[in-house]
Structures are given as structure tokens and as C-alpha cells.
Length: 249
Ligand code: PGA
Image (cartoon, rainbow, N blue to C red; front, side):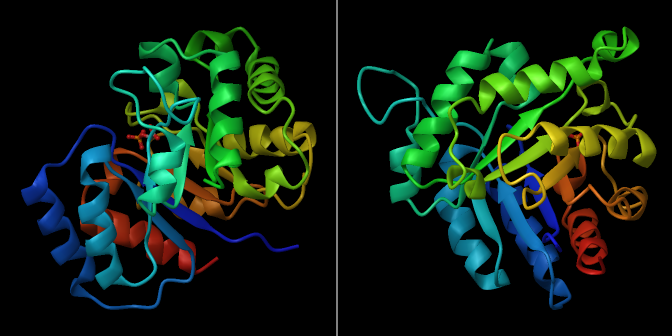
């Protein structure tokens, strides 16, 4: 079966209003039909303005970078999946390594977040990946297996339709050191075997220093269905070029 290709920009805590406007002017300069899922996850506060700007570019989806594990209550500073859904947000990224490392989000809370997002019909991009020391000690498969088993525990077959996996080796994120296409493919192939349901239908994206000059190699691999992109998604010309590449596969 043929899965769709995705290019998802994770803007993290970057870009102010002025840069956002410039991005969309540049992104829209050359009009072309993009035959892949194109999406950006900006800071929460910018979601409404991106929804508006994205409308002018055609089919771009707009997502969030995090969501709380419950719908409402005394959780100062949190944003619920329910409110994101109300605001027309298309998906949420959960389990990013920065959330795991800086904000200490572990398996249990991530599992609650995934379930709550799905309950609110908010599709999830679920991120997993090993650190450099875990890779060097031969633990890559063990680590991603644990992240999938705990993070997606209790997920039903039909829920799985609304989950996309992003394999992001932590040592490749923001370092300029991407996994080779063979290294990435080996892990993607393995991840497919341990998914709880819909092993063949589920899209698995690669993330970690994806750029216009390495995207084609990565996408040429049978189990790499797209990319979650940080740094290179901030510049419209690079992001557009990634989308054009993905449209060819
Ligand atoms: P990067 O980030 O493309 O800058 O390495 C990827 C990510 O964190 O999702």
C-alpha cells in the first residue's frame, strides 16, 4: 500500500510576527501544486494567525507542539487538546525529545496526553528516539520499543488511524548530524514491526537535521514516509524545497 508523504515544520519557540509574515510571502511566491501533506507547528499564540495565512497557501495544516493530558481544570500555563480542537488545530506533536528532556515528560504522562488528544479527535504526531549514549551502547531498538509500548499503551486499532510516528534520534536534532538514510531506514523498519496496530498503514516520519540536500535520500527509503523538520522549516525557501521533494515521491 502507498502511504502519503509528509513534511511537517516544528518551529519550536521561534519566529515572531514579522518573520511569520515574511515566511508566508516567500512561501507563496512560486505557486505550485504540492502533492504531500504540508504542515507547520508554531508557538501556541501564533496558531490563529498561521491558520489565516495558511488558508491563502492552499492546503497547509497547522498543529500544536504540546497539549495537556486533561480537558480543563487547575493547570496554570497548560493548553488543552479540547481547546486546540475548538480553535481548528489540525494535529498535536507529543513526546518531542525536548519535552521529554527539559520538561521531564515520561511514558505515563505522554500516554495520558496521547489518549486525551485522540479522545478530542486531535491527530497525534508521536515522537520517539534514542540519545547518543543509548545508540553507542547498542540500545536503540530497546529504547524505541519502550517508548512505543508505554506511550501507545491502550491505543485501539481505530485510534491508530490518527497517529503518525516521528523517529527522531536525539543526537541528530539541531546538530547538523543527520542519521544516514540506511541508519534511519533500519530503525523505521523495526518500528513498523512493533506498532500495536496498522503496522503497514501507519506513517513513520524521520526527524533530525533534515535539509534540502538530504531529504531525497531519506524519502527514497521504503519505510520513511516524510520528515519532521526543525531548523530547515524556519526558512520558507528551504521548507518549500523539502515540500517539492516530497511531492515527487
Ligand atoms: P532539526 O529539529 O531539524 O533542527 O534537527 C528536528 C526536530 O526537533 O523536530
